[in-house]
Image 1 (cartoon, rainbow over the protein chains, first blue to last red):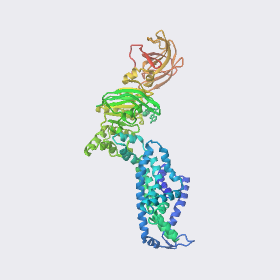
Image 2 (spheres, helix red, strand yellow):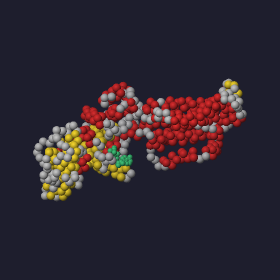
Image 3 (cartoon, rainbow over the protein chains, first blue to last red):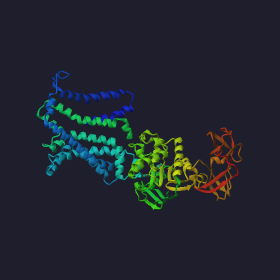
Image 4 (cartoon, helix red, strand yellow):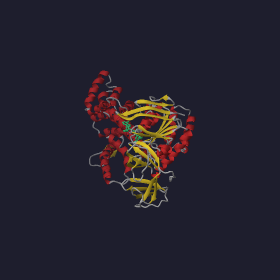
Length: 285
Length: 355
Ligand SMILES: Nc1ncnc2c1ncn2[C@@H]1O[C@H](COP(=O)(O)OP(=O)(O)OP(=O)(O)O)[C@@H](O)[C@H]1O
Ligand SMILES: [Mg+2]
């Protein structure tokens, strides 16, 4: 869902620039999409502030912040939140560090077994994920990585690889080779060219990939739960525990709203960067 | 001040020879145009000089120093690309300053040099602009400034004005020529526009299939092409097939005499070497098919009795109408047989009507 939201947000300004005249099919699609995406969000958001809400009524009978204070006063929510943010930051940074140079190599260089290697990145996503996770968990158990911060970092890192390779490869392939050659010509070595020309030129797209992998890591549950339990409890894992223990709709709703915050911030960020036309133009988009 | 020498260069892509064996000397301060049809290997030669392609055979020398194995960032060459290749995430001034910053010059000096370079191309006030805020011609000027600011020994340009409109192209061409003269920088310029080559070059090198067809001054290239290919490629040229018999061409309109072995030849006549007058020619009738008025001159499309077409240039005052019968005389005729020029004949010693 977060992916759909993000791509929607980035696609919007482009679409509105191209088609000025109102297009009723497009409008209808927007309305349908709005209903499917927005209505459940609104319902959940209302639940977070409802104290009593019984069936036939369209709006809650009693509003209040009782469940908010109840949730926010719990220390494990705060530790989970900060842990989740730290995890996502570390995973995304590591992933960028590993994947961006690799993506550049895939896009620009010609080396033996390039295609095989490239496919192997995809293969890790073609297998049923849970089976792979269990196998990795077995290895981690021997390495003493189970239930540690770095164990979870490693497992989540694997999950981001595809997105952080695939999208940047496309981004780097779109960078004008002549620009890179011009930089060589001006006296820059290959690494300097990457840093000063290729990376900034591919930046908007790469930024989107980084955000997606941040958000994706933040909401990742399977790996976090399998490797992290019981010591490392991220926000989504905590939420699942909550919901399993006591089915009070409001707890889930409050946590959902809390969980939206990072993705919402990320979304706003993308919109500002990729959406503003001057930025897009500046990068020759 | 620098001299460029290409020695027996050879390059192939995927097993096919693109450049077979090419040697060329470019003198200090000379502007040489590489001219040729698409795919003739012009860009490949230029990119080898810039260090972006590695030749398989031969050597590239700049001031006698072998740079064949030197990577582009260490070569004393500056390149201007067709697509301008400016870095769109930097300002105009940053584009020009990039190479200077890499050389770790003091800030003040960088600023001075950038201003100088932008002034040189007439864009002194545009330093703070973004690349995409400039017009196509301005962008190409920035690209030239960016190459020149590093004071390369050799300036390389690959069809830099190809994407601009005619007027702008002519203006930038002249500006470039002025700058090049002023700096005295040795320059290799790739183009497939013969007018550009004729206007710019000290010397034109015509490439065909990766080999040098002819290298000569624009004047000689135009007036004394050595092969049929060059004759047809530079400027427009009328070719008329006929036979040589006993030292005389058997074409009824142009029975030129030349000391040439008997056999088939092609007569090559420039449109401006033809004089058109009303009346009937002796051997063969010729009729005006179409008249185009270019203001400075008229271009007549003439059909000969045997179906051949001839283009002739005449003064704008000439009163010709389509369908009118005319008489043709040629002041200069070149004879080609199988690509090779056999003879050059000046038939009449009189003023040619130049425009
Ligand atoms: N990187 C490459 N890989 C394979 N073949 C190439 C490569 N670069 C050039 N060629 C081939 O080499 C030949 C010469 O190309 P080149 O670009 O030098 O031509 P050109 O004279 O510059 O043509 P144009 O006027 O179209 O730019 C062409 O047949 C082209 O297909
Ligand atoms: Mg070319």
